[in-house]
Amino acid sequence: SVGGWSSWFVRKDWIDCFRISRVCVATERSLRSGHEMAGTWVVSHIADHLDLIVSDIYYESEGEESIVSVLKNLHGLSEQFSELQLEIGRNNKILRALVHFLNFGTAEAKLWSCAVLVNLAYRSEVNKINIGSVDGIITGLLQVLKTKSDSDLIAVDRCQQEACGALSNIAFSNSSNSLAIAKTPGMLETLLQIIEGGGFGQTSQSASTDIIEIDTDDSGDFVSLDTREEAALVLSNCAANSREAAELIVACPGSIECLKALFKNSKPDVLRTAVGVFGNLSKCEKAASAMRDTNVIEEVLRPALEWPVNSAEELDSVQDLSVYSMKATALMALTRLSILEELRDLQAHPSVLSTIIVIFSRALNNRTWASINWQLPSPLTVLALLSINKSNLEVLASNEMLLELLVSLMKIWIQQNQTSRYRKMGHTHITEHDLALAIVTCIRLSSHVNVCHFYVQNSVPRMLRTIARRTPKCEEQGVKYLDTHLWALEDYSVAVCMALHIRLGSRHDCFLGRLDERTVFSILQYTLKDLSFISSAFAQYLSTCHVPKDKRKSKQRGRLTRLHCTNEDQRPRTRNHTPSQNQSWSRRDRSLLAGIDVEAEDERSQQARH
View 1 (cartoon, rainbow, N blue to C red):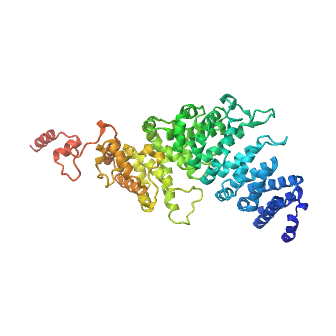
View 2 (view 1 turned 90 degrees about the vertical axis):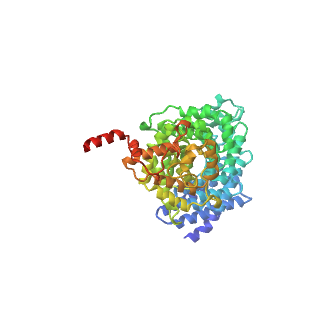
View 3 (view 1 turned 180 degrees about the horizontal axis):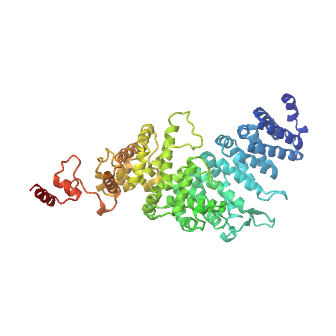
């Protein structure tokens, strides 16, 4: 019976590897049969056993084999059963025991403690919060980073590799954990030393080899390339989720040069990881400034975009996916580091644009691509910025998949905000920031009349009005239309397009189209900060495209041309030259507009009457 096993299980004198394995195997069979109570029971008793070991001052090292066996089985249970992953992750006794083993256990106990943390933090936001709240977890992992394996059966850097994996999962999509990792004294320096493969004194050439010595002694210890990549992933996840962490990373002496040296390796996965770190660092303004000053664009991002790979239609290997993923990440970073003039000249290869659209699709559907969990702001931001270039805009506007994805994103946001009980399986959660980025991209693509017709046919104006009603105003802490990453979008064409709103101009002829660009920028900066306002304005603009008849296509195309013109000699005619719709048209005016010679027509009519 369960009650009869309780006293037996807690007595450590009776516990050995064989009996623990039997209990865990029996638990696995019970869980597969639907008996969840068996899993809860065994987790509780493993926690009691580990707590007894940690608190027993008479515990001696001969029980180490038993500890490793318990940790191995705990690792297996957390990996195979999601319900036990949460059960183990919220058990404070187990988490405190893991802290103890990280700091005071043998190398093998530290290794398996890290492996348990890797599983507990994997795709579990609750467990990440629980793990981050336990004192000593991060400092314990720092101790493991400095530990070398003392077993002939385990690679000397295996502890470091598992510790990096645990730190990466703990930091992923968790800003507080990311910042805590970056603020831990000695953490960033240790990670950079691992990445460089032996300290800051190594040259770039020696740091780019496959196996690098970790120190200068004669022990023969090595840090593998895989471990160096795992350490870089920790920095990447920290930078992705915390701007303050990104600032701390670039402020660490030698950090950018160390990461640039890692990029010089020829292994695609490592290249992608190195570029990914720079991509996440570029989200922080201070880090981006430091990257511009250290030639990251010339030495890393542009070479990454030029890396050879098979065509997008011939992707048949993991390596090809890694390279295209690297190219997409490099382009994302490059757009964030470029100023407006550079963005106007930044023409992306169509295959990379297609890759970014695929990433957008996977992120929207909460699916990985190329073994990466992409977040929506990454593809949405780069799509909006790339649309500043006319060639990129042509390619994006002709991609029906992109248009459908943008419409789907708005639909999902509306549905998930209809009721708190709504949960759309398979889709990620859409934030107001994601929504703002999508609407910005829609606005830029609207310079093509066919895109406007697509929006109208798919009820985008109605959705925009719904969004306008449901998004709070800026004064009520609503999301702003533009943030510091999208400064380049505050340009002339968007301002003129938005000026169709009655607050800034008339419906059919825009007064702002004749203003200086800096004046337009100022108006945009101080007026168009509200997502609700932007949605209403864009919906009103699209309502003018409602009837896609042939006789209105030319008129609509001309209107769009006036909206998006930027050159002095291409400005639209003023009201003095363009008759308003309320003004009466003479027969001569109508005929001239239609290209008819009125006097010749009158002469033919008189001859016909005679």
